[in-house]
Image 1 (cartoon, rainbow, N blue to C red):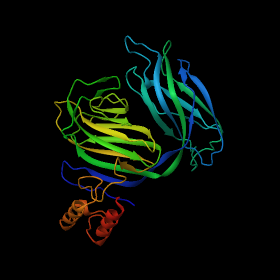
Image 2 (image 1 turned 90 degrees about the vertical axis):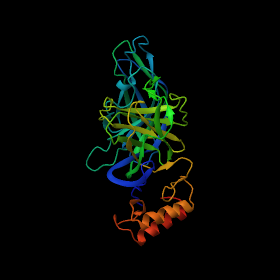
Image 3 (image 1 turned 60 degrees about the horizontal axis):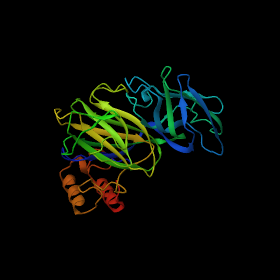
Image 4 (image 1 turned 135 degrees about the horizontal axis):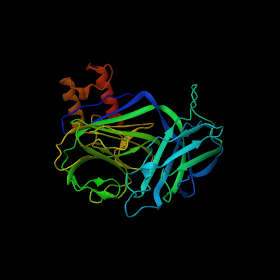
Length: 361
């Protein structure tokens, strides 16, 4: 079911889950734990035998930890995880390379890896390649001699084309009253705080590649980062998994006021997306965050979103009913939850009752 966003006051959370026909998501179909690998300037090649899979593979991913085996600990020049790349050849000879930059940080600090890319469809309407056979993975550290990079706790993942992407969107404000000293890249903490932040804790119901985008309405500087497993604002570097600068200097070429990155997410894991004020001197601003991928985003601890997102989230009670009735009588967007858009009729009432009974949007 397609559900349009409900909209409430400035300090309220706006949520929407929609099926987006613009592109197909890719979900994990098989995972293969592998050996640690060192990657010198000449690169390193490994093979991955695969058998017994029935689905075509359209994407390839890696999880683990990037590290510098031989690194410039004095000047911090190299190697950087930002420079790492991989070229993968599927059984049958289809070869694809990771985007550049694929993942990483602009320091020599260790960096968590959870990334994937697609493109093995080969054109002609083919959804993927036969995954059974030997895959060849050529790792490139992207750094000259004598620097040596490494991957630890490595797992390779094959992904398949899913149904159309599911998009989860919410609108909020950076003024939350939550004070912290945000990270400065992976290696340290910013001295521009304490600053305010908004936190979204969530899970997904499908393992696969998800895209994150945060757009600050003012177009000013901001920062978003993703934590895996747990979040403690007094320990901003613990469990930090990915980030993107929203100040116009992102390695992913996003404009000022936009933070954007991709990440492999897995069922059964709780993630925390933090949208942060850039500095204590930056003005508070609205932002719109979007998570797009092969599965549904579920706010952690709820099982599903409550019917009209009335506080407290995840509790279906009289406040939800009153909120809907008030919005319906006033012909407010929060009650316009069924097609056609801009019409408040029995279809909206039926949609609300169904959502309330099911405990889900």
